[in-house]
Length: 422
Length: 215
Image 1 (cartoon, rainbow over the protein chains, first blue to last red):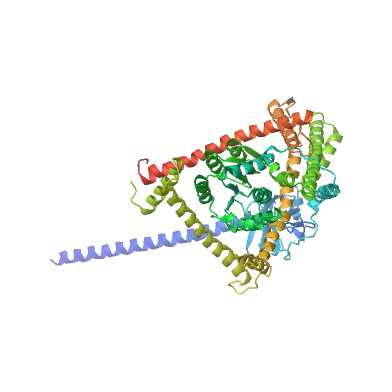
Image 2: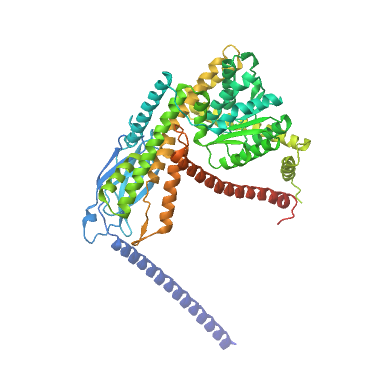
């Protein structure tokens, strides 16, 4: 029994010793691995630090406002990094950073090594900007000192548009000359425009049939030149309407157009000596919503059955919807728009269509007033200048490109410098 | 078939407006009135909050207490002048803001229009009529250049109003109108195709979202 008890104690002690040994071994292994991990981390960082190649940043960064512009450009000039000049340079590129007055910074350009200037054309008047440039190596970036904040300024004269000024002055002088010529009583010739010849007949037809006239001045506001041209033609149409005492309706999709239309109609009625016949109800506002306006005008067409429909102004997808409905009620239709995408629809659905420029010539043609005639003649001079420039330019381009004639290239460059304003 | 109220309203409105293709009818009149009334109300609210509140009021009196933009008072005064139209006695004053808008627009847009629609067009047309490629003539590009040059010159001559379209001048103008008509034809076909896609979109809505016949 004693021996059995001793054997049991010995086995227990042996197990205890084994457990201690295993625990000690595990502890040693853990400490060893941790030491290895620490050593490897030290080694890695030493490798990285050894691979970074220090680069000198660019110096003497100067930012200046670009003169004779519309506060849309700042010019940056700097002395490239010294490392940029080494034969085996580690400098890969420069990066340009912009800091706005709100403190936001962002990279705005990446330039190749050797660059020493840049123009930031994405700036606005009323804001200050500062810049810094970094020399970029394989895995590092070293910034220059930031420039002083600078605000782009607007100049009175935009040098890039000087040729535009000269051409406008030539056309302006020509317009003045033609206006004075017309005022002195000399007849200025304008070729016949078929669509406009039909206006009086169209108004007369409505009078004979005892049905109203519908005038649509487009769906744009008064800040659109097509709408302005349309309202001008409305004045002339209303003068005839007032003389014939015909009913006219001018639904608009912009409140300001309604105001301008009412003023125009009122003036036309006064000019025709029929101010008592004028009513504000002749022009009303429908809605700004494009197809809501179309639904309303189509409804007016099928219910009132106008004898004549005018579409003069700027139109979009509604052009065919309006013109087709007008056609279906048997109205004589005269349209004019400068939107080339919509002209085809008017051509197929209307009796007469004023194409593009004809819309703007219409008011001068209809009124025969010296101011408008002179303006139209001046525009023709502008077209003559454009035709001459295109003809010379095409000949010069062909000569320089196909036969490599040097002086023709000079002529082409000169013309491009005039007409390419930017 | 959809069980959503909004889908049903949209579908019935679509059918109502399409019914105009048959003839004017009460269903169309209801849809037309709803469309015009709701869109007018919508735009009135949008203009009020976007322009009067956000741009004008908050521009003059910024919510963060900053200094307001004094130039906006000019717009406010012009807007008030427009309201003079409501009075018969001083209604004529409303012509001033209209005149200002038309005049300012003409002045502001003149440069942009002249540069993009005239100067740039002239510069872009000055291309060589003969295009070479690797020593030889690239006939396709050459024909393209000739067509562009002839179309631009003849088109410009068509829009020349100081001379009657007779003789050689009239002949060139006629070439110009031919080019214009060909361009309009191409534009017509292109736009009709885009309208077809709009129609398909509506049909897809009716037969898919509403009736559930298309998955």
